[in-house]
View 1: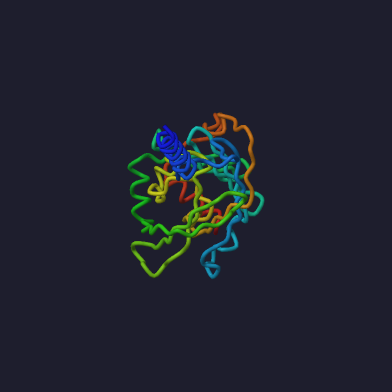
View 2: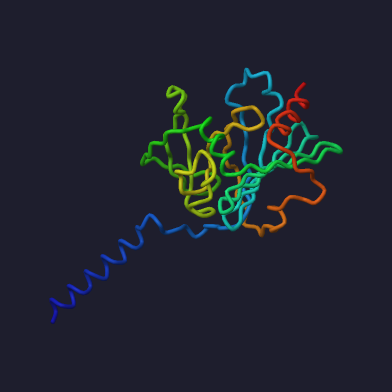
Length: 227
């Protein structure tokens, strides 16, 4: 009888140990909805467009959707809304009386991702970023293997398919330090603060007063800003 009790105790302890150490267990401060502030730096500071780079980004997330808001020189506001379920990425631009929106579909995004393909190598290294335990990945550009950089992500924010329509779709977690090419520049984003807050569903919709234009028209619009 004593041996059976000891055996049962060992089994229970073993189960508790493996459950508590499960990589899928989330932290107490885990969030599926909230806001993240990022600091932005330009990868190539010698670029003639480096002076136009935003210094910060505000990201709000809910129901696997992301809304990234940027401000350029205090006058040009642009945002990107990622909807993995619908396989769309919508960019909004507001500049004085100009209000334009561009919706990219799965086919459009596939081409964009081909132009910015990244190779990922998992590591055992970790780092705390903005109060969250983050895993490190060694990244390099497929079309330029010498271009290497670090990527950090956490499984305690958002859902594991939140990156499904971008070049980071292989990473199952919220990106906390990463690179991306936006506004004609390669930028490095690093999370600085996470806020537990409710996010309005209207944030992920195109406002009625915005005119929908093509990607070519949006590119020309930005070219006119930089001239």
